[in-house]
Every structure is written in C-alpha cells, then in structure tokens.
Image 1: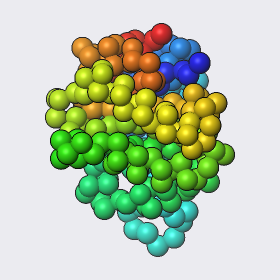
Image 2: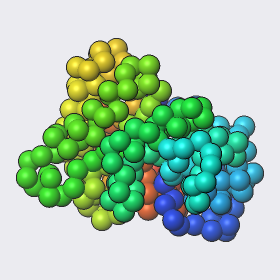
Image 3: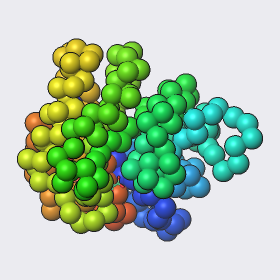
Image 4: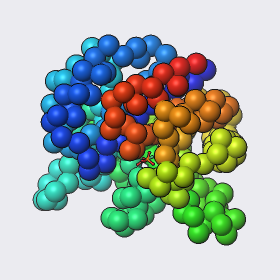
Length: 250
Ligand code: PEP
C-alpha cells in the first residue's frame, strides 16, 4: 500500500514569521499515516529545520537543485547543500521552472540524477498547459515528460515521487476535477507499468497538484491513483495545511 504524502511548496513566499507559525502548527503533527513535507525558499530551510525538528517526522525539501555538484554556478544550490541543511527531498521540473527558466526534459533528468547523487528524493513534476489539454494532447505531453524519467530505468524510478500538476490548475483557483485527475494518474501508472513493470508502478507515489485546498483535498485524495498532493498557495496557511494533511489520512 502506498503511504500518502502532502508536500507544501511555498514558492517565493514566506518570511521568518511564517517559519515560526508553521513550526508551531506542525510541532505535533502525526506523520504515521501521511508523509508531510515542506519546501520553503532556500534561506528558510535552516530556520524551518530548527522550528520543526527532524524528530517531528516532518520532512523538508528544496524547490529546485542544480544539475551540477559544485563549482562556478552563481546562484545555484547543490543537492549536497540541501542534504546538509536537513532536506530529504527536492522538487524537480516544476512547471514554473520549465516555463520561466527554460528547463527542458534533459535538464530535468540531469537534476533528478544530481538529487539522487546527494541522497535526495526528487519529486518530479509533469503536466500539460491549457492549450495542450484543449488540443487533446494531455497524454502526449505528460507521456513525453514521463518517458524522459522512465528511460532512467527501474533502479532510478523506484526512488522517485511523481507529481501531476496540470499547468492550467496551478495558482489559478481552477482545480482538475477528481475524474480528470484520476484519468491522468491512471495513465501515468499504466505507462510506468508498461515501461518498468506492474510491481514498480503500483509502488510509485503520484501526487496531484493544482489549487488543492482544504475544501477539495479529500475528494481528490480519494481517487484510486492519487497518493496525496503537492500544495502551493494553500500550504502558506498553517491551519489550512493541517486540514489538507488530515484529508490525506486514509
Ligand atoms: C504548485 O505550485 O506546485 C501548486 C500546485 O500551486 P497551487 O496549489 O497554488 O496551485
């Protein structure tokens, strides 16, 4: 059975005040039935680790990682640095990075490998734009992004988490219906099974992301192939984030 995960992506939001509020909110959270992960901006990782100690069970992650391990790459952050600051995960290939930082499938794959070299679990984001959905190309786009990762083989894929995030639902308030989410998640699981076998595909965690809120989380997480969520805007409200975590409890 796959353990659900709820991951918060603060994007370029937050402050030390939010770090402290979130620390208080998450101090006693029960992570036995749901994996809880928070991905704040890089400068807040250390303070958040102090506010929510590792023993709480709450994991921390980065929102991006360099494809390189070290060197003259001003502004980049290496996987080993994230790991040293207490991160266990890192988001890779978020649609905002694909769109605004020209991250191709090739870059995403390099970042997946860089994260794994540092012992981090990559959370790989895939998802189609509204134009692609309207053109009936959802499976083509998601399939291409997924194949780039599946091509790395089973020994790599078994270490990953996938997040299906339709671009048209991110930060727009427009959520995929449970049926729309389930259809793409089932497609991802089937394609993974076709490439790497059913046993691995059944273990593969696939999160949904795109305007998940306390009010719609339970319905989305109730879908057979949805294993929790990657939460943007709603992860900035400690009480709402706790409600979303509760909604993921089986
Ligand atoms: C995200 O940025 O990964 C995301 C899902 O954002 P939101 O929940 O705000 O749509």
